[in-house]
Image (cartoon, rainbow, N blue to C red; front, side, top):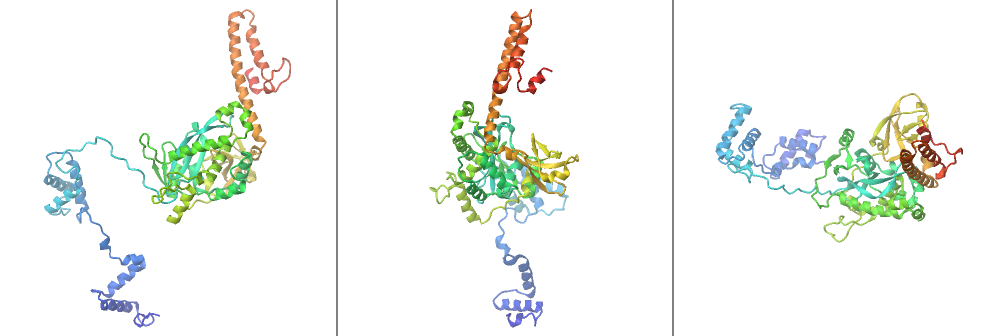
Length: 549
């Protein structure tokens, strides 16, 4: 219950304010009136307790005091003009500043302080290492480059870097391709928020792909459990984790919208659309500072260690029968395809790298206790109390790069693959081109924006066929046939060249040597490399038929 003098039923607000002023005056407060109490009550309603703090104790000292900002700007300009002149005095600087004020704002329009105040102002604004009247300094060597600010919260600073993977992969055409990994590493916790494998010759990964990988948790992505089951079934027989354990571990893998992205040179491609997305999400972009020769700083050294350890795991995960299956693959270390290698990398990062103690993850008070990235993340979350929230599942397709494609009777053709789903039935064959978002390094599904404005996932028509276990043998047999065809075409070219040389030397009269070379080339094409007798029947070869036109 309020005290009698503050009863709102008996007294108005002004009377209650006057009662409070009398009470404060009785307690020893001087010069307290009803207006003072009213002002304090209003500022307390707007700012809370902070509004009642005396701000005079919070003001720091200023080198220019209460001098007009226009006079300060004129003195700085005068110091810049007189820089390096040996015979310049402070009086000349003051006179030049007065001329600048008169020319800029008009004579007599700006009140100038006294001459003694101007002397103090010039001494306060002048560079201590280069006072008026001294020679201009020359830079003999570059100054020390300060390191990046320390990250104290999860996802405060995320660095993007690229490292070469010392293990090859089987490309889409059956040849061996060099592989690189582009990863987004949290600087504070050391967690890998995103890691994308790509051919080394294809250039940098688009930054929008990395944003989609790091900002959207995997369990929220459309069709993620089914895609994980297919990838788990099509990989090696000996896994690091069973499928239920891997699903549980992947759900705990961190995902967040970074506050600042530090881009290494050539690590990711930045477009105008990516800049617009970063501006809307509040993400700052920075370039990694140049590293001196021999310096090991940033996420690149850790990423190189990750690439070396994972390459050993990829080689050890091959089945024992693959060692004796093909000596060429063993020498090139190209056994896994790119999707299989990406699946192995995701499993290895979740099950091994995030649980492996690292040298750089140490607390100053516990220098002998190296923490794992997952443990460091728990420590930082307990200290910071928050982490930038990730995006929802429908944003995964929005962040991926897009293009316009037509919906035909067979579905959508993109990158030599056909994508089809029941949601495309009413839009087939109308000639309209729809917005299609796709992952450049994951061809299992695309996202199509239909007239309802939403992105609908559309799976690859042969995705289930390509992930069956026995199709791994078919893929390797196809690669062997393509390698045999390439070797056979090279031998045929050499035989034809030799036959042409023989024809020039001793077959000019008959002209039968070139015809014999063509006959041998036609006879060498058969099933599995076996020759076909003249007049016999072999497999129809479109390329050989086209060569006779």
